[in-house]
Length: 328
Image: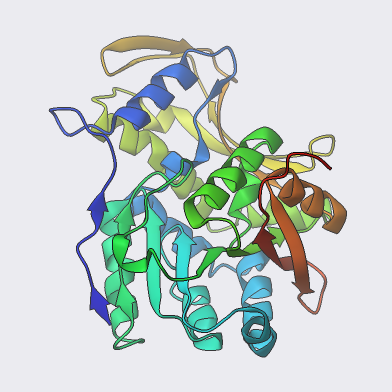
């Protein structure tokens, strides 16, 4: 594998602070129901903690999706033309990404991630598994349209978005992301996307509140990051991890709940929270097949195929970017 220098597309101020991170944190903490977008959970430490979560007994999504990628590789190859550039939205999983790359015959691999250190580490890890495959890591916020490296401009594109990460977003944001993916990849591109399915409430909650407390550390790491990167004074011990199921919204919610009254500063601004108030940090929406189809269609993606694990817990869908239409 040849690994090119990553493209720096994250906006930073003169002190090196990610301006989008600061804006989202300050805006989110100013709301009555404080909330910070889930993507900021994934700094280098957060990304590693999430990798640890995927190995937990309670966390079934990784095992279910991995089963699909292992068992259906030949079917993927029948749908995906050889010589494509695989564009992964998020740094490559050490398990799932190699399974996809082994199943098809790609000409290049382009991982996109906002966490530059984790991005480069993931690219280096793949180097030992796929010698000769060009890799072009791009450090960028893939929630927006991303300019891909010129080396893959003329190649057919296959987007890869595993892990049901799309479920972290509310419906309008999910559709916006899928539209931006379509803009990044271009009309005619394909997308392989993982989607977690609705199931028993207790199974869902255990997956986001494990007995070993790894998910709690993952959630609380956001406070550590805010204090480190934005000069925060948040008393981390004053917050506990909380996972809730919302049946109306078909999602598991993660919160950081204040166990006492607190006052703190972030980037020079002061905030106060009462005991029991929360910072909403993540949603994990769960899907049914037709709701997933509707979401993809709303963003200009035509579903082409789908596959399920043996216990019907998880779905991997293949979709194609449709051209714009002036009329029905």
